[in-house]
Image 1 (spheres, rainbow, N blue to C red):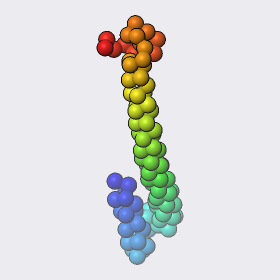
Image 2: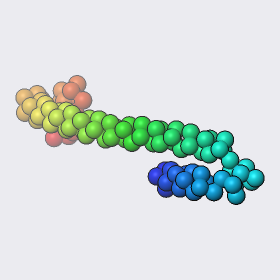
Image 3: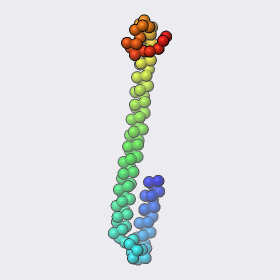
Image 4: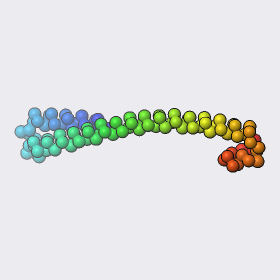
Length: 100
């Protein structure tokens, strides 16, 4: 997961800084650590943005579903009124294809 990879990067940086002498010859030097930190920070920012987007979408979906339910109720009521007040032969003009 994102958080697992972010935590792994943090641990690598912390341990790498303590063991630079041993790791530098292999390419794990300060430049590499700086790249690792910068990339981790970028991923953290993007992950935070994504989580905010998910929360916003969840909220918008809840709002949409509530509004849709209100529309469903109004349509249901309108159909009932039409069925009671208009002859069955004219229901089709209202988009009602029911037979009764």
